[in-house]
Length: 395
Image (cartoon, rainbow, N blue to C red; front, side, top):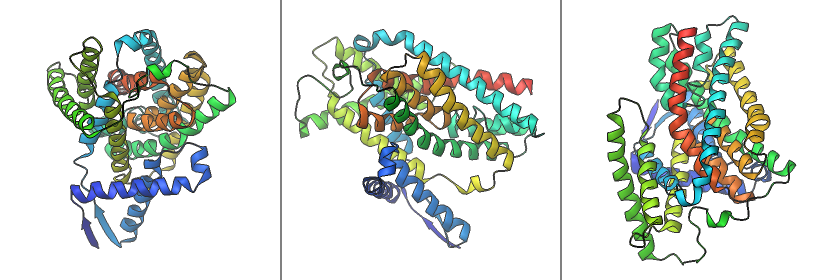
């Protein structure tokens, strides 16, 4: 079999081509625009399908270098951290706690559903956990972390099953989030809060044109931020707990944002930082979608497909009938529901991509753009670890 190995530079260039292809297809496909499917998903999934076909047909094996994925993800997460202005979002505290509680309930339901379906089908309940919150809320990273533990517990293919389920969830989260948001917003005739322009990341009352000087300053600021974030992550590791690198970047950016809010001597270039963050998210998502090993899904057994299908139904019903209603039945609640669908099945970048599509079509929800990544990147991971441990001991 012919083997093609692309280095990091070719891989990034290919990611841009994938983004351009996805944008072209979306412009010419009304159904994709109508259901708010993110551009990186369109191009990335099609590319992943092509790689899968080439690999399984024996024509060639394509290897991509994804070593820069984390760099782009940190640039994006730093951008999210810049939205954490206490001056503007101090009223969102109770909502953070409420959204975390709802997401924690979802984690319990995901694991419970997986175990129950397995028992009904007379299958090892560990398969249910491998298709529960480990890959759904946890994503590929958590799947890789908990896979060996599942194997020690008795599920021989624990890592493979959990990783394949995480891949399924990544695709499902991108395809389900937009349509749910569209349904909630249009059915309930929701509109953004008229005050959001004063809160949205990258906006300001005074429109300052972007120039080379400001963009250069913004680039310096975000690069310094992720450097400080690496130091924060190193300090957090001393606690003995497992924190993703994104938490350090978000915390560092939040600190800088709040310093800037209280002094005139430090000027964050927020519009330019927003641009860098958004571009980084697009590239990161394209790279993530391109490197998905979809052929792992082909070997999924029927019980896994049933469980994963049930997980999609669960999160759709939970979002529409629980999260949306409890979070206020308003525009912000709808966008948060879209975000929860993204990280509840896939990952936080998936959630953010889904929300950005809603933002572009219907308007902005700064509170959702702050609350969803905060809960999805930090707090829910801690809760998920505890709940997984409890279920592992119960089954």
